Length: 386
Image 1: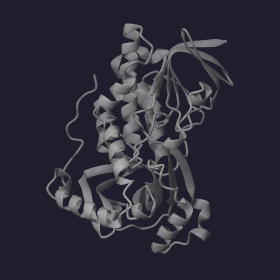
Image 2: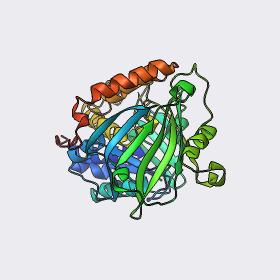
Image 3: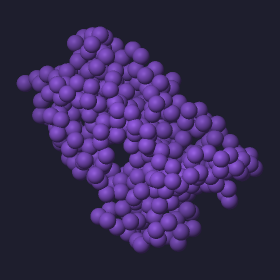
Image 4: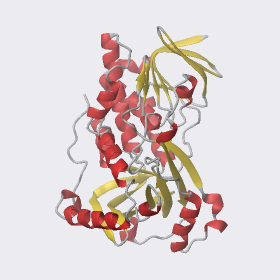
């Protein structure tokens, strides 16, 4: 039996759930015409915790939502290179959630609005026809006028449609959640992103980010490598992480079972983000190539996708034309273009002297910005989504 809907969203993470929430905000009656296909079951285990920046908070607040989920409020994110650093401060500057809890809450909000969320339903085949998209799962066949591929960096939907991911757009992440520990108050509100290995080949940073689980605060450590400069050889992440952990008094060899890795592909404005009847969103479209920030941009992609879908049904134009421009013009996802350009410059620099000078100058400038005020509330100016 074929199940016909107006909209199929593949992937029950922040991008897919945000798309559904924004569609329901624009037209509450649309809820019955949406189905979300999720291969796993909430709560889902995810690599590393999720930091929700003010961009993401503003998107949620535009929907009238505030996550009632346990989190660690960060007051400072410190960007370091050697002995120089500058900071983004706020009250809070970001909130760190367990992704499993955050995603489960988002899914519950989607269900409250009457949207069908089909869990344990991975897609097996997909094809575009003149009337929309047909998707087969183990439980049946679905057909819709519009589909959103919000199913992660590997994107089975994208793969099924023969829509390749460029091999030169790959980023890497290696995560090491430390055992639960007692972290003093000030340290529990400070995240450190250490870019000191850029000159040695790491196109990214090493991180110390406090997070929590079941009320216990612990330090999450790891590496992000953008890979945006394909002229530079890839650095071995495991030896690099072992070196970093050794500085913290941790022997990786005895704790290797804790390691978790995840490949990404980064946002590149030269890519296609839509085909007839299909839009990409979230990791399937591309993550932040500068810092690997995911949740805020995933929520932002959902907002852009929802607006595009509503316009598509109004105009009966399902070509996907204009979607890339809408991503770039959005107040949240538009920042991906700036970060792409900045990453291409920053991660191509090999001179330790140039990087030290650049970081020193940035630290001077940062003192005179709003981000140097620890009482600044960056998500205070909320605009309702309409």
